[in-house]
Length: 126
Image (cartoon, rainbow, N blue to C red):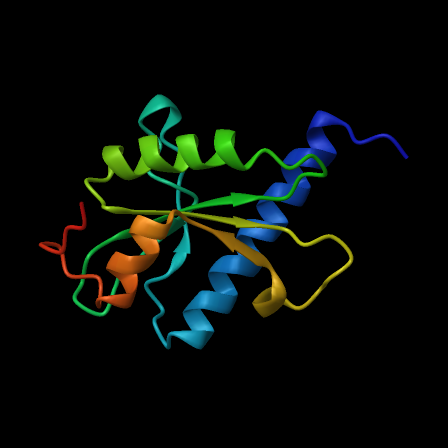
């Protein structure tokens, strides 16, 4: 079966909903939801995700068959800049795996270190 643009958009929207619902339930935070698209000023696909200290986390969600981590991270970093966030993250579909908690998460080591430090806005690592 060939994937059309419409079926790809539907798969992406469905996966975004799955990710948002999973995070909202796991973090007990009903403010987490799919974000309205903002065109070139996009601020990620999921709204309301914050670190323990309240810093915004920008999440780019991907449900595609071709992996392009560099491209996706660049997109997440631009969107994090649009949202004044230090925490760009990509969540991508692990095909053949239905459990939302078993999907892949990609971020830089720098971002990971800041998150492990508690996600304080002033945390910087050179």
